[in-house]
View 1 (cartoon, one colour):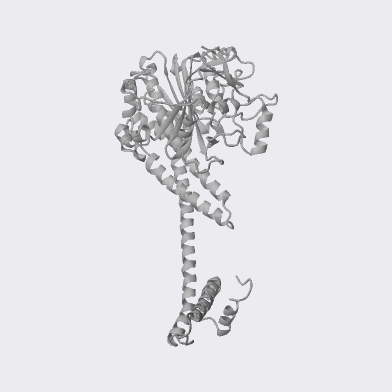
View 2 (cartoon, rainbow, N blue to C red):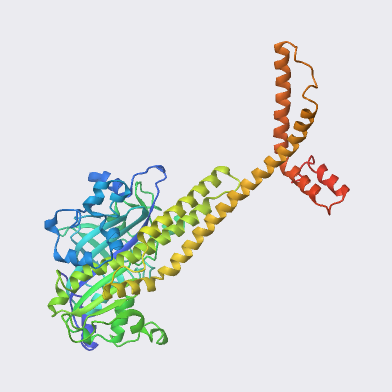
Length: 565
């Protein structure tokens, strides 16, 4: 299925015989923000509806999974997955079931929509220039959409058999990169695969990477102030397109996080106990293999003091014992990665229906998905606030109105996210609960949630305060108009409204006087409104006993002084 890199394998043997990876599974999860389309800003269709309407122009097809399809496809591993979570998490992951869908409204809307493409059968990668290519089998490639949250997550699962440990480490380190991190003095791309090619079932190349073409990436950043997505990932996402690209598309996306995609990995080894502490550190932090000249015994590129509490911070060692159905199984979590290592000879560890492999692909994947979805949603809300402020022009009434609508929408959306998708506990099973806590603590979700919540609350408080200020100004102006109108009302009422004896005059004369008086009263009212702010200052001065008569006259004189405000 693949070719082994001779240099890495020889280095492993020279370093004391690193255990071979009999089976490797790697799952990438790429959170992205969905952007509104400038050409159709009022399009209310959901992104999955737009993707379905693309028809033949899109390779993505909605998945009818075990929960939405026939019960014949529902197996024991799906049941074990379902019962691992608490009821409110089950509703988030699987919806309300048939009765909920028949009820209609938002209650019947599925919380997640999954789309899958079937044209990519394998991916051929080259870690470094001169290395032999390695072919990974693509298990599936999915897109996850979420109801009421403008986030999409790409999920790709790949697998390979019989690898050297250094080769597996390099594959995990280099594969999930949205674009190169830079280039060395020879022009070779850093940190990412030297070459990536998507292959169909016949082995034909569908798309390949362009990481070595540094001029394309440099020009894109210089023009757009945003990184350019590598060609093979951009091709895979189509018809979704990068928001900073010039390509047309109703579905556009932007990066939310670092260019390294969050990663899950499953490694079935000959003997996990042969892994050194440094091996576990490299797997957990996904730092790649040690240089061949250094070997497995070489130091990590981290200070020793920084890694003193490695086991307490990153390891879940409940099953790291030489006993049980899956002996010597160890879970490693850094938030950005979730890795499980175990014994290839253990039937339960390798079982895809009931064992650790099934748990890795179902329960543990959903734990990882929930944590990263929560982080992506919080970052999306934060981005919305920044964009709303950036577009605000306080001197433009229309801009102010758009700003208010954007903040109100963010506040309402955040409330719905909190009550629908925000959890602190997702399971009562000790293993699932522990892995979720490891993920959320390393991702710092609670501090991020509080920060976004505080920012949105501050914005909403500002809008409320501004609304109260405007109402107060309106009340002041109306009070001034009423006060000065009261003078005329009392005066004319005292005189009996008989200043002009026109009761017996012809109708046209009465209408003429009515028009003149009405026009004068209207002009006086509007003029008073125009001067209401200055007149309110004069009223404040009159009511202030500390003001002298001369200063009060000065305030009155400023009512008609140009530019007195």
